[in-house]
Image (cartoon, rainbow over all chains, first blue to last red; front, side, top):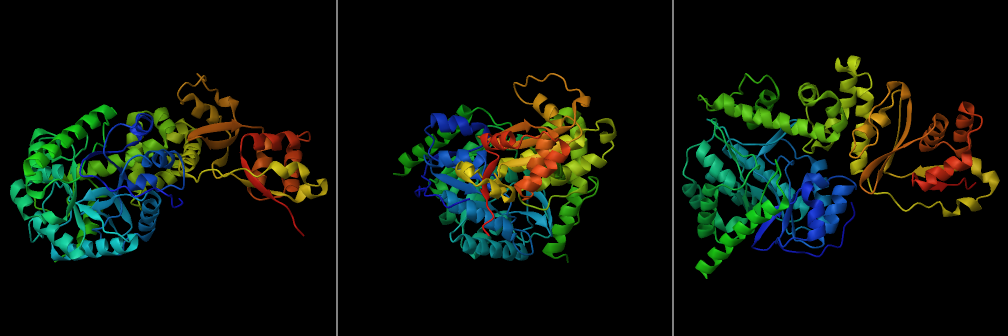
Length: 283
Length: 256
């Protein structure tokens, strides 16, 4: 994958959508008025082919954020250098406005779960993931954002609440935060904590992006499925986040049961209205 | 106290193993088992989806439930070893070959092999500009020692079953309604053209010739192999076919 001469396009403080393959053609042909797009890095790890060809066209017209899902920053042992190298190539090719990964682990030794698994909130986990974030930033030659993940389990070995863990990692690694408000809401319900307290303890000056998505309610708890519209409670928490953190680029994520593009655009427009309202209030 | 490395190894081992056991170090309450199962289900669903994307025809042939069960068994035997699921289904054709379903659907493993080649083609480097224009000017005595280069978007495949027809039958707008298993064998060139997959079916001798060229044998050696199979093999028309369909990207001449 060669270096392409895409001009730098910073991610605006506005609403974007996750770009997924069912919408490649429509976005290319109709160029909807969405402020920016985000893709999963691993979908473009190939040497060539249709996915890259579509994104090559789309990237010419939209600011792009690249969101990795497979680097497993929280795993002990060395980082997967082949994966990091591929990530570097994709970033080098598309010249994205933002690059992000997750505060989670997916791998033990060489076995991958291919899921974003929660870490115990311990000093050892902080050291492990912060070291890997620093290595990643050094390899990519740029600062990255890391995202708080949804979780369904609690670990007795944790020595601090999630917000303290997130804050300490970000300060230790000197990276930025991608705050997923849906994940925060899911965790607050599943683990019975106050989402506002969580927000109040985050290093607000480190936030560079916000994610919004839909989840699924079950008798077991809330599951972060990315398969529905953003619910009212998450919209309320989003408004509270903007109150505390100010406006930030906000992304609508939808990964399962992907609806027509118009539904995503309508959700993005709703997020855009929140941003404008908040901007008007704080001016 | 467990180290983080031990804790993670135990977590992932239990995640991929028997659903009824929990890893150590989880706060246990009445919902814990069900919540751990959310992760187990997500992991298996992600891996099954990756197989489904790579093997849509195999999936259609065996049906949703059977595919689910085969995918589960495959995930247990071949755990993922990458953060990118692109290569996850690599061993699936071999797995299908040894699976009891292959005694019933004898062609299934070959359909899987064909689909994996197409999966590879989906991510292969884009084809280069073919450099064959000056082929006609090469002196006749040099022709037998020439070697050809193939486009990155081409794979060769042979099966004793008519797997090309089976694959075609499962594509949108296919005109093939039924496949007779006696219509095999299949001698195929698989290609990615303009982002889509296509199959070129050729004769056995043409395939042997093409396959020899793809192994970097000389034109003379490849021609001999084709002639041994069919004495009337038409070299010029087959080379023209490979050129027309953009199978070849260039050639090298013996310079000494």
